Length: 254
Length: 299
Image (cartoon, rainbow over all chains, first blue to last red; front, side, top):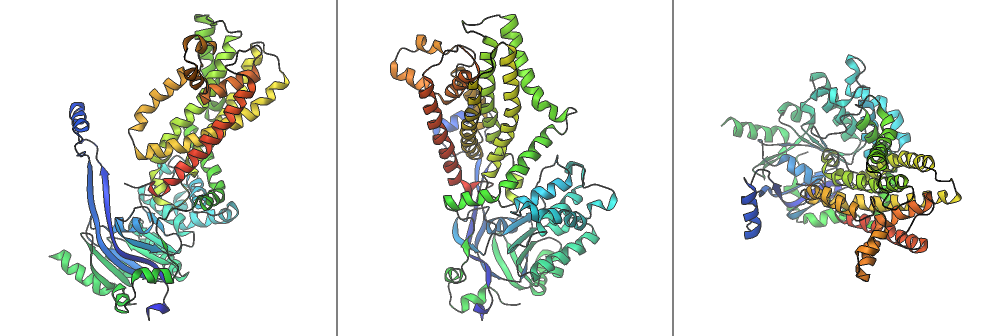
């Protein structure tokens, strides 16, 4: 039964540990010097065990919602699937190159929106010939031109919602094998949210797999039929969205 | 679709085998060097566009904009002309000292700005790196191209200065092109190496100004190369001091542009050294950067 469907992402008992270099650990040059001389482990380097032994298989054509309270390891897991963080133990396998789309993904703020569109498309590996017809399409989809010609203004003049919409539009312009979306749908207004949910459905129809991290239960309910609930780096539940969300709601209302 | 990972473990198939059967790759795997080079070549348009964007955005907020590309080297040369040519009036026994000095300052400045930008090529673009997948070497290479573009303007200013201070235009001036190409490849390797260093150890950035100043004083930018022979008496040490790649590039450029200039070695030795440094640093920097590819954007 499992062999009929093609897996696109396999996470096999993954552990992820962050090493964070903190500023402001040593309070004086003398304290810092003492640390070096005594070879003490730097207090500024801290380890955070963010994901503790997670396993699941995602299949082609699935949209999977990742839910959990703040700091439960959702974004960390996505970054590991994208190959941006190493796993401490276990392994993550993926078909093709998963692309992470996050709202904090910065492009070049001093450049106009339309040049950021070209830059983003080229950075996703499109050829200049492919990019040309896409530019207008992306800008129209993002809707940043609805209130005047914003696409020729530098991105630093955009509101955070507009910038997030443009970034989502750029990432969604390419057909991805695996698309990882981090809270992106939560930023736009209602109209844009509707459009982007439609776009996520289209991407899925094009036989990719979509992961969605969001705190908006509504957008998870609307786009994903399967959900994984992470809590303190462990999977609490994995199954149909309705069931998982019901458990999750019961947990958070406590 | 109620099917979950649990169901798969029920069939008794380990996840690792399932991944192998469907040909899934390990996320975040390091590509082989030829594979990586091919990928990088596929991203050449991105590199060019990014380099362009970088120039526009850095000068975009200034009123004069692109005019600064020519103004910067001109003002740079004017400062040295006023201090050394007019106020101090020292020539250190060098014929046409202003042209001699400007050649040193410009050639050294090329490498210096590449190193300064290279340090931040990765650490200053974490947003881009964490959001999108592309061979990370594209970033240090793009900043090298930015500096190459600036250097073209500087070279034109430099040639104008040499002509203005009475140097004749000879066939030897054509050598400027191969020297420039060699130094560009050398700088690209240096940018790649410093980009990785800067991304791993943030402390390194604090040291760069001192390293570069030490390097500048050791490269005969401000004084004649004959000083080495009178100051360094140990023959091995003298060879090491005179094999300094920037000294070699500066000397070659002086040899190409100026008449009657004293060199540290014969032109043949200098050309061999320049080629060797270019291959060593260009290729070495690339391999060193590639080996760290998996780690960029982490932490």
